[in-house]
Image 1 (cartoon, rainbow, N blue to C red):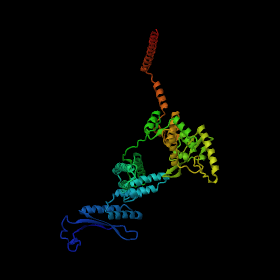
Image 2: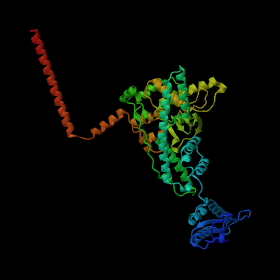
Image 3: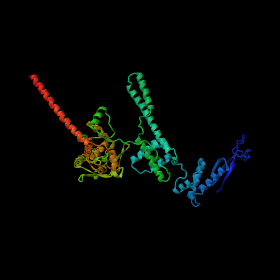
Image 4: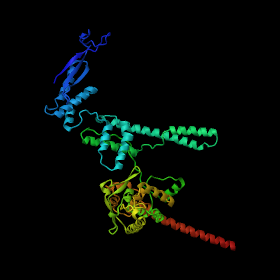
Length: 533
């Protein structure tokens, strides 16, 4: 195909405004004109011509180098590869029109073989939309990804080219999120101060009404109360981006994942703590929980179950407290997978929340599919619950919703997991016991099993953990008497001479104290006798 380099003068006639071209008197000066190139490209499908054109080169050598570069790109495709020819032609036409740098020849060769876009103009936002549209996971998972993309990723890095995304760009994004947190806290404080001030202004009097009106207008202009983006959310944003970029690597769109290398603050998960007498006393004084994750002692768990014995969902509270089912698993447990004769149930599904909507879903992981053994007492509780549910079914008649689930609303329809949590919190408050979350009942079940010396593998399988290390990491809080027993058992294994000496000293001290006490009694008796005489 035809191609050439040529000199061009951009000087114009001051009267007509037209370019002087070859008639410019300075044209023969060595550094006056610039060089340009033009290369014919394969025509469009309709036969119309197109070309690559670029100017502004300071020397003929630089112009010739780029012309050779264009020809090398055209030479990557065999003459009988019509599709490849059109792809390269479209790429060069776009590079020319957008004044983009010429693509590297070897990189273009690799992209052609991999079937990738030859011009890396795909933005992060465009890729994230494409990636999210191709995900085939449960709705709640899609919603979480969509939130990360809409709220954080698109606003900060959506405009960047996917193939040019760097670790530094992500560091800047997380720094901006942290700065935004400070702004949110300041705005929340301003709004809170305005609300408190409004509460102090009386309703009576024209001046007070004017102040209230002005303050309400100021409140309307302020941003609403917002939550800050905490460490856990930032880690989830990073995980979302990392997963999407891994898929881009899998499709050979990019070769490097910057999200795998950016460093952000780690999430420190709170450890579960037991409600000891000392912690309960402090809570009663201050109203503060020692940790977000609190566990009842066996006595406290028993007191709660006794308190809610007449509740319609007592069997659910009992099952979670003793066998550690998750909230969604308990809400979605079917009778068809609950074998009371064999003292077991099989977890095969769950009810999950997406916003406030509820949907049925499989367990999140393979380890979530599991068989849970049931003790005699729990079987008896579930049998009684089934009889009561049968009575409800007969009472509702044709209006009964046959979901086949163990735990339902009065008419047989699904329980809403969020409403179950609300009910549990109300029952805990009414019981007067120190507060725990519904999920903490599951923590309590795990702690009880570990306290009963159940093998860690059995505890892990019962809870649906994929690895026993997860069980150990989460449930490191033990009941006080178990910890003391372990400490005493450990101490007895080590023979100490000092310990024998301390015991002998203690015996001597006790003996001396006993003699002193007897001597004191003898003196008191003698003194009393002297007074009588």
